[in-house]
Amino acid sequence: MASWQHAYWELLSRDYLRSLTVSDLTRSWRRRLTVPPPGEELWVAVTEDAVIAFCAAGPARDNRAWDGYAGEITYLYVHPSMVGRGVGTALMGFALGKLERRGCVWAEVAVLEGNHRARRFYDGLGMRFGGARWVDPRFEVPVIRHERALNAVVDFDSIRVESAR
Ligand SMILES: CC(C)(COP(=O)(O)OP(=O)(O)OC[C@H]1O[C@@H](n2cnc3c(N)ncnc32)[C@H](O)[C@@H]1OP(=O)(O)O)[C@@H](O)C(=O)NCCC(=O)NCCS
Image (cartoon, helix red, strand yellow):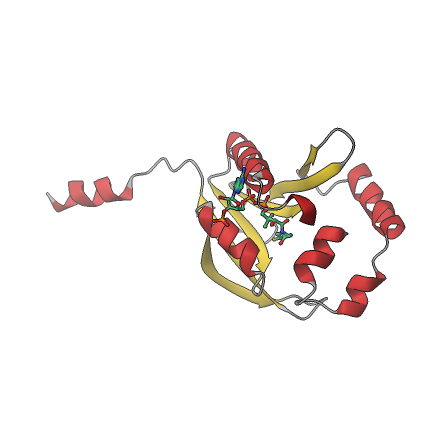
């Protein structure tokens, strides 16, 4: 809840963000963890006494062309008091590695267009804006997709060199 409010204060309705409660979120997360979306896994980063970040990933929801081969980071939230210390990078390394081991060759993440910090973070991990942009129907704000290949097995440069000979 703190991460949402911190990250989205300038981007989403403040009335909505103020209306979030720990008990509502606990209830909805309990439901989601009991019956997770097919193929979704979730990881948490913890200190001795608290969860400080979580990340979830699963099959890409909107990528029919790469069905079975594209994975999506569905959640990545670090507590505001812990940002900039490498926790997000560590969770992403874990999640992308897991997608790769499940046979995914492509990874994507949807991010609010105005969430510049997160977009810089994904850029730094090689996940670039790939051109997809839409308006979130619930919050009516623009969302874009950052994406990258995983474990590329085809070296397109060498193929071009070979065929030019
Ligand atoms: C975006 C987000 C997930 C990034 O996680 P994070 O833990 O802050 O990221 P990291 O600390 O791993 O990396 C951020 C920066 O800190 C640097 N860093 C990494 N390890 C570090 C360390 N041990 N000490 C200091 N800095 C470090 C990274 O190089 C990176 O540098 P950059 O500013 O050039 O990108 C986090 O800021 C967050 O939860 N934001 C709010 C929610 C959100 O927007 N989620 C994304 C939804 S799509």
